[in-house]
Length: 91
Image (cartoon, rainbow, N blue to C red; front, side, top):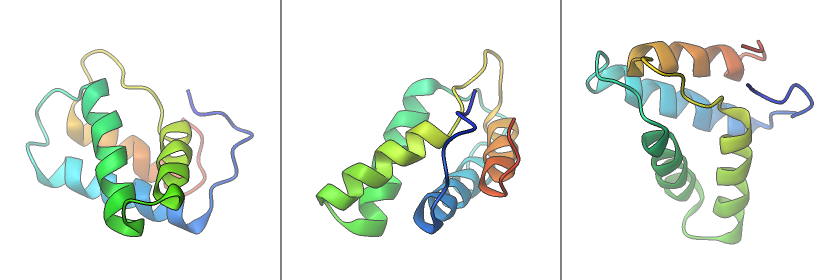
């Protein structure tokens, strides 16, 4: 569950939307995995900010904002959840 005390900055909202787009566009019916969530957080953070300390900080904020993956969740379902979080709606 997302920590409701987390304040999302613009970069985190952008990263949540980009992650959601990727998941919804590529194999949306496939099972979502926790390892995918963690790996893509790193990839998208470094893509936005380069291999920097800022990217590491953005990755940590993204992981804190993105809820854990639930058993049986598809990539499409998880993408929809991320879009809600990016809009400020707690799951």
